[in-house]
Every structure is written in C-alpha cells, then in structure tokens.
Image (cartoon, rainbow, N blue to C red; front, side, top):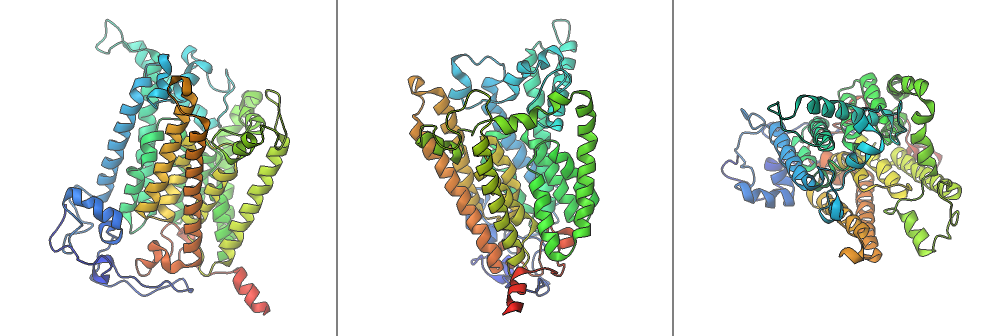
Length: 508
C-alpha cells in the first residue's frame, strides 16, 4: 500500500499539502496544483507515521492517492471497523448465553444491558416496549430492542431438532441479533464520519479503530443515536438542512444528546446570519421527533413518559463528579440522604445552573472567536460539557463524544490517550462492582480511573478551545489551503454577521 521515495520531512509542503496560515477572513490561498487531493495522515501525524511502520512505512510521495481500484479509504476503514467489532464480539461472547454465574459479566468485562433487560421488559414473552412495559429509553431505542426481539423469535421458530439451524437459548439469539444490528450502525457511523471529514477521509480510521468501539459497541444501544447523528451531520455538510434536521430529530428520539448538535448549529448560524436555515432544520427535527413519539404517547402515555420521570428522579451515577462530592461528604451534600425513588431536587438545580453557565461560555466563544469555529468543534465542546457536568455518565455514553472528537481535533496521540482512559474506567467499574472479596478493587482505584478520564476530557476541551482561539493551529484548516469547515454545509466560507469581538472593538 505504500509507494517509493517516502518524504524525509513530514512538514514538507510538497508532501503534506502545505501549511498555510488561516486568516480571519475565512478564506486562504488556492491549493497547490501538484499536492495530493486528500490529506495523508502518515505524513502529518507522528503517531500514524509510527504505526504505519507495521505495514511498510509512510505513504510514498509518488504513490497514487485517491484512485485505488479496490482498497479505497472507505473500504479500508470499514474493514478496520469490522475487525474491531469482531474483537468486541469475542470480548462479549462469554456473557452472550445469559448465564452470568460467578459474576462472569465483571470478571470478563462483558456486561451488556441487552441481556438483563430482555427478561426485565418481558421481551422474552413477546411484550412490546411502552405498550406492554415501561422502558427507560427514548422511543427509537425501544424500537430497536423490539426489532431484535422479533428477529430472535423468528429464528427460534424455525430452529430445532428438525431444522438445519441449531437450537440456541432465545436470550442468546436476541443478544447476537442486537450485536449484529449495532455492528451495522457502527459501519454507518464510520461512513458518515468519513463523509463529514471532507478531504481527510483517513480521519475515519480514528473512529473505526477506536478502543471505545471495542469496549462499548455492544454495552447498550447508543450506536443507534451515534449513526443517526452522523447521518444528520452528513446531510448538513451537503447543504441539505431539512434532511439534516429530520435525521437529528430521529437521533433525539433515540438519545437526547443530539439536541446539543442543534444547539451548536444554532450558535454558528447566529454568527453567520443563517437563522432561517437553522429554523428549517429545527422545524424538521421537531416534526421527525413528533412523528415517532406521538403515536406511542397516545397509546401508552405513562410508559412513554418513563424516560423523562426516570431521568429526573435518578441519583448521580457512580462515574460522575457529583457522586464524588457525595462520597466525600458521606452523602450530606446537595439534598442529603434520599429515600428510594426520591427526586434529588437540589442536585438537579445545581446541575442545570452549571450546564447553563457552561453553555453560555461556549456561546460566547463561538461568537467571539477570531474565525467562526467549525461545527464539529462547537458540538464537541457542548457534548463534552454535558458529559462532564451531567449527573449520569454511563461509560458507554463516551461513544457520543467519539465522532465529534475525531472531527474536531483529528490528532491520534491525544485521542488515543483519552480513549485509553475511558477503557480504564470500564475496567475499574467492572472490578469495583466485583468487590474486593472477589478479587476486585477498592473504591479509591475506581475513583482514580474516573478522575483520569475526566482530566483527559478536560485536556481535550482545552485543546479544542485553544484551536478555536488560534485557528492557525487547527490541523483541519491550517493543514490544507482553502479549507474552512468540511462539515459546515451552508456555513462553509459564509461571511459573519454577528461577532462579539467585532462589536466590542467598535465601542472602543
């Protein structure tokens, strides 16, 4: 896959596509005619360059780029993702039968929500989410659970001693089907990341080879929202605001965090004076959300509302900073000791205020930065802040942040260090649940893993903020002439209409 005469200096402009400072006008010089039409990470990223030694070294200067007959960047990245997903299944296989005796779900780090919820929500008896059972997830996630159950019952109906298909416990069939559906969604998400990356298709390898995908692809159903959000960003990047809004609305119907993407687009459209474009996208999102939610709400209002009531009344998750405060104060902070099911009103209020202040900070940064930030940068900051300061941060929620991190700051070293810290949180969580009596770990070790992860996320946030404030250091923009925002769609190279820094200067 490599050519001859690999460059001796990765910063050589003829090899890496040049390094042109990004000016405040939002436009830079035209591309150099003889440079590759795509960014080659083994020329520009030291970690990618070092890793390439395993397959023959960095891409040669005279190698053909972008015109491979079969092993295109898309097919290579899909192969990467398929390999990681296969390894993820190997990790999950010990738990797939549903026999968790000996705490195998903790000792083998293979816990997955689908298996216990299969029986808890009556899916093993043919119950339908919401109609027959209250489900603590938004509607499309419940729909994915129901789809896997229907397919599993179909397999069970045609298998057996008189069939060529082997007899398998239905819960295991259900889990296998769930993992296959999630694998397809992971491949869709990989394709979407590549499309949104523009002239940097190999950035999708950061998603496809992610340790987070290995650890959490099958922990819960989060990849449904990740894939829909990626498709929404793809549509926005192609300047199709209504389709983007509809896809983001469906993503919100799977998990609520894609609302933050709409928030990021609102801030950027406000700066560019494209609020009508945003209104079209937001209107389509509302319609799409209503289309899938209203029928369920009309048929089973109480069960449909379980997600909202559960989110309000649940306490702080073990992996959050708020739970650390509660632990250090012996539960006396905020609301004090609560009865089972009692709503933590004070904690909810504090978190709401903190999130609002953080959001105002991101809004100021977006409107005051010397160059309008990219969509992925603002979305990353909002989702990262939501995870850091929310009262629930289940370990698999970090999958939400992964595509934005890849697109906001596609540098291998920092992203891999963060993802390794996320994997350590999962290992620490499983061993902590296992307990010291069963050769698990003490709470102190668990907190060390959580704090290391939080520090890694804060560092990433700080690095993205720095690159927003100093766009010359943004590898997406400064690493290639003429690039503004590959995911920007109508925002790409659009002139600014509202800039707080410009307003403040006009008063002086």
